Image (cartoon, rainbow, N blue to C red; front, side, top):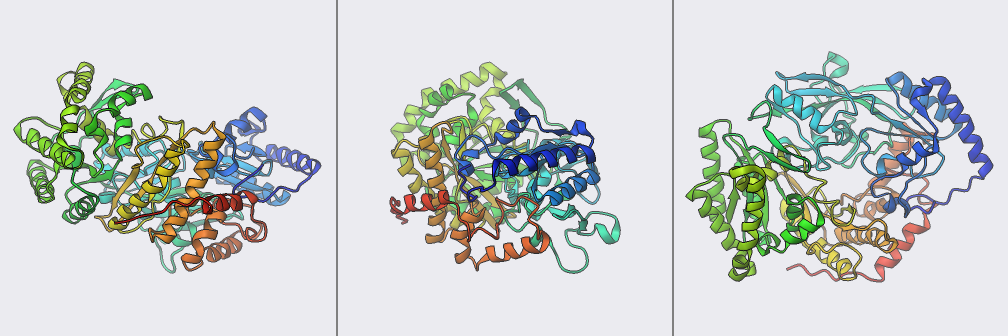
Length: 606
């Protein structure tokens, strides 16, 4: 398989067949056979993964030697022993979203599917933490947490994804980050089966028997086990973890109506949801900082205009109609927000402060509710758009907006007039619409930029990413979303932030598949040259080769960690680090860099 991450596999067919026979036979001896499959059809379903084409150039990542569904730690340890015995690897996943959760190399890796480990073990209301297993999703944990007045952070991948995976093994920023932090910052104790099959417990669990603190006595290993991006299964398997929970100032159960894919979530009393529009990138940067410092919004983030319109629609035909509305297409300098008042007095204070900040920046707001005040702030929002696009574009939007409102009123009655706020509330609080706005256009998407940096640096990165993306749009290689498609937000009161540059494409077209690889490489180079920070795509040896020299040679330390914890390289670490990469760089990575260097985008930042 021609891979961006791996050198050529030089094993003979006979060697491969011998390995398959031995591993498959022994797995059935150590695990209940009903939880082991070697059926080629089943193996291929595990190989079909999101962004497989980025890693391998095809619709598939590597076919595993076998798939096992362990029911406990003992099962996992037995699988590891088999892999060590025969010199192959294993790769764990929980909800399994993306190529990084699967093997890349064909017939060399045992896929460990953790879906049977799906319990919320403990939900401690008083001390505000939860202990969970790998297959507990954001939706599952949040639903139970809201019943006892708690809430959990959910990563941008959406509510269907594993909370444990993003906390222990992957990146984990999301809409709620301004008040609920992000995944790796919320990680408390963990149960960790190391690459060699030993069970370790980190955090406060060992001395107390309870998970409530991320670090116990002595040195912390949290940076070793996950760092910023996580090892993505390359340093063993996490079978339990504790995550920090937060207060939920809302009902035990949100009221929702409608049928898939058209939902309407009722915004509770003393809650507000909407979008704030200002006049420039600089104003948007200032808006983020002021909202963070004021600590008045609970969820805050940016969606580019195409993504906002995508969330409002159910298919591409409806998107085309709605995206013609100039007002929706021109909401570039905008932040979506949700405000959760503890009571009426708290709500009034927060809304008053919010409006003061927006008024100082000469912006406007579209939010839920009715009456003259809502109309006043809507007109201010239109004025902010008009300063960029002109009043004629705003006037031209009136028929389209009226049609959109009538559609929603027809579906949900009078309250349908608040549909845009309601869908924003659902998208942010429940992380329920994240994939709806990204997969729709071309069938798949990738992302870039997205360093964890100061907010104004994130905004600068959005400007850089847009310029690079326009070149690929002009060449007809990716979906034309207007160029601007930066998604992200602020975390922990604005102390951190990130903005990714999403890129939609057709995974069936070989030219598009190559273009997305080149887009990632070029944005990685731009992050270094334009000082935009360590990208969300700084994963895997080829990308480390670009970033590591500019970041204190961090990959050398990753390789030392990997060698110390996994000397036989039994835990598949293709998206983490490879000690042999410099000796055997895959040709596909070098080819991509040569192509990109021959056709660079000229970056201009004012």
